[in-house]
Length: 330
Ligand code: XLS
Ligand code: ZN
Image (tube, rainbow, N blue to C red):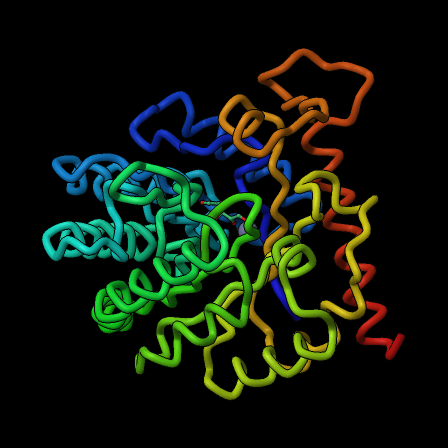
C-alpha cells in the first residue's frame, strides 16, 4: 500500500525551522491531517544562503526533534528542493557549479536530518528562470532555448552524478521533476529527463512524476506507460505526485486517474504526494492563481469557501478511492 503524503505548499513555501511558534503550527497541521489518513508530508526547503547551510541543518534537526517529541516520530517526511539562479548546477561557470553541488549536498543533509528518504524537485536548471541571450538579454525560446539547454544539461550531469553518490551514503533518493513549460524552461517533458539520466550512472538519481506536468507536457498514455516501465527497470522511479492541472482542488479535476495510475502502481510502492498550490502570497503571481485561497484554520478567518483542510481531506479520499479502483481491477 502506498503512503499518501501532503505537500506543505498548501500552507507555506518556508517552514521557518528556527521559528519556535511556527513549529507548533506545523505540528498542529500534521496532527489534523494525520486524522484524514496522511502518513507523511512534503516539506519545501527554502534555498537560503551559503553561510547559513550549517545553521539550516541544525534548525531542521531541531524541527525533526520537536516533531518527534510531540509524539509524531512515525510521520514520514520528503523534501522539495529547487535549483536557483545562484545555485545552478547547469551553469557554464565551474565555480558556480561547485557552489550548486555544495548547496544540493546541504539539502541532502537536511533531508537525512528529517529522516527523509526522498529529496525531490527541479534540481537541474534553476526553477522558473527563463534563460536570456548573453549579447542582448533577449529571452530564449524554441530551438534557441533547446540548444542552450543541451549545453546546460551536459554541464549539470557530472554534478548530479556526484550528488547521487553523496545521497547514496545518506540513504536519500533524488527524484528530479520534469515541470511544465508554463513554469520553467526545462526539462519540461519526462522524455527530456530520461535523456538527461542516460548520461548518469548513479541509480540514486531518478525521477518524480507529477500528474500536473505529465498532463500538460507529457507524450500521452501509450508513450507514458513505456517510460514508466523503463524507469522502473532502471530502478529510477523514486516518487509520485498527484496534482491537478490547475494545481488546485484534486477531487474535482480532469486528472486521468486510470491512465496515470495504471502503469505506475504495478511497479511502484513508494509514497504518493498530493500537491496543491494554495493561493498564498508566494504563489499567486508566479502561478497566476486567480482562484480564492483555501482558508487556513488557525491562520485565516473562516469563510463560506472551502478550507485548506477540506481540500486536503477530499484529495486524500479521492486518491484512495482511485487506488482502490485499480486494486479492484477497474
Ligand atoms: C512543482 C514542484 C515544485 C516547485 C518548485 O510541481 O513540485 O518542485 O514548483 O520547488
Ligand atoms: Zn510537483
